[in-house]
Image (cartoon, rainbow, N blue to C red; front, top):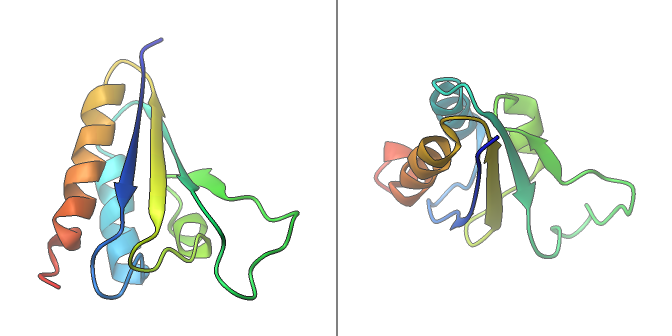
Length: 103
């Protein structure tokens, strides 16, 4: 099964908030690949619980918001499936375009 993996950096002003997460889920849902998102680096202050899972499904709005991805946060996008490469590219493009929010 084809796999693809990329690291993208959140650069929009508000981070991966509810509206951005909804756009991310909508885009991820366009693909057949199974896509996961992992927060890289140090978790934000107050969220440094050793038992907390930092990998979530790309189709879970709540999971994505639990990553607390603020500007500058690196996310690893990983997909498994026939359209894996297209999926991670599309999601990286969405992140790079600041979720089409202009800021």
